[in-house]
View 1 (cartoon, rainbow, N blue to C red):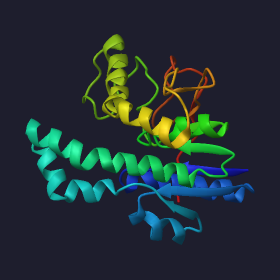
View 2 (spheres, rainbow, N blue to C red):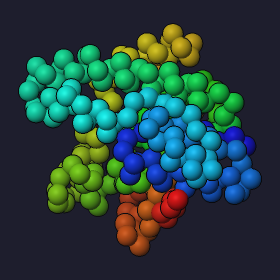
View 3 (cartoon, one colour):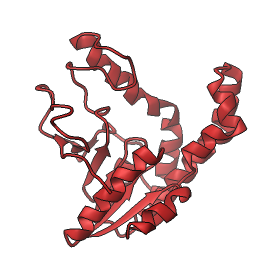
View 4 (cartoon, rainbow, N blue to C red):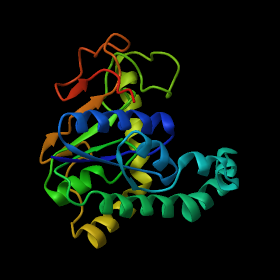
Length: 228
C-alpha cells in the first residue's frame, strides 16, 4: 500500500511521523511524508520520501507578522490572519492535494485541515496521528496545554471542544477549496468521522506515561512512541 502522511507544525510535531514512515517502509509499504519544506533534509536523511506542504510554522512565529500576532493586539491579529495565515493555510490545502495523489491510505496530524477531505475525495481510509492526547475527549484530564490542572470531569471534556473549535475560522475557506479543487459539496459530517464512522486516532506515546482513559472509545489507540 501507499501511505501518504501529512504533518505540520514544529519539529516535535513532524519527527514522530518520520519514524512512522520508516516503520511502514520496513513493513513493506510505500510511505511519503508531506511537511513544510524546511523539513526536507531531515526527512530524506532518514530514507523517507518527501513532498513539500505549506509554510514552516516556526518561521512564521519568528517573522515580524508572527511576533505581532503574539502581541495580542486584536487589530494586528485580524490583519495577520487575513494577509498571512489564510493564504498560508490555503497553500497547505493545495499542497496536500498534490501530495495525496495515488494514496491508498492517509495519516495526518490534527493541524492538517485537508486530511479527512482528501480521504473523502480519494475514497481511501484515513487515520489521525498525534504525539499528545489532544483529539479524543475524556473526563480524566483536560486537553494538554489548555490548562495546567484538572477541572473535573465535565469541564475536562469541554476543553476538547474548545480545541476542536480552532479550525472554525477556516471552515469557509475549506468549503470553497472542496468545491473548486476537490469537486465536492459542503461536508455533511464531523471532521472526526469518515464514511459515518469515527476516524481512528493513533496516539504516539507510551501507555505507561499516559494510561488510556477508561472513557476513550475503541478507535482511540495508544501505539507507543514513534522514534526516528
